[in-house]
Image (cartoon, rainbow, N blue to C red; front, side, top):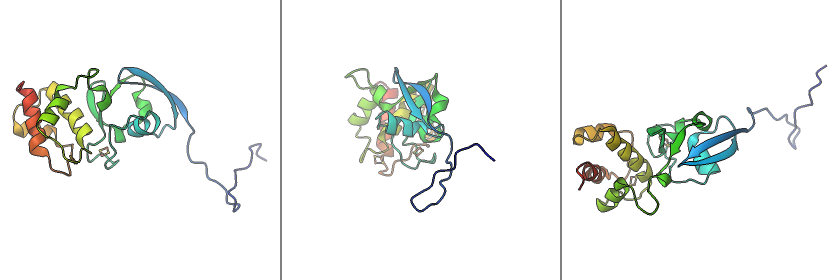
Length: 175
Ligand code: FES
Ligand code: FES
């Protein structure tokens, strides 16, 4: 005979299944601030940011790694936060769109997106900006073909691509 307590029942008497491990304690450094949370190990970085830390800048477009709307940086490198488990980011620095500006001063890429009118609905924009700022740091903005290639993971359903590239060129050229 097992000493385990019986599985819990629903109101109709059905046995509830165990649905994976419960919450675990995780500490994330987000935009330079340590944040402690209790989450199930399967929680994505995107859901941890949006649902647990109220950082809703990174957007959930597809939740399967195809649109780029959820792009953030981990240790300065772009990641798709919908495909990244939050607990794998413990001990690493997470940067979101909310952490890009220096106080009241927008990042050069944010300013350029405004100046070049590089968005319409704005849903993809946080991801586009995080990718664009990383691409410029990485030195992958040599010409339009290179910009297209290195921004190809960020989809814009409003097709603001020419203006997005203009914003990237403006920062590249110090305009
Ligand atoms: S929401 Fe992550 S790639 Fe679309
Ligand atoms: S500005 Fe609307 S999806 Fe890009």
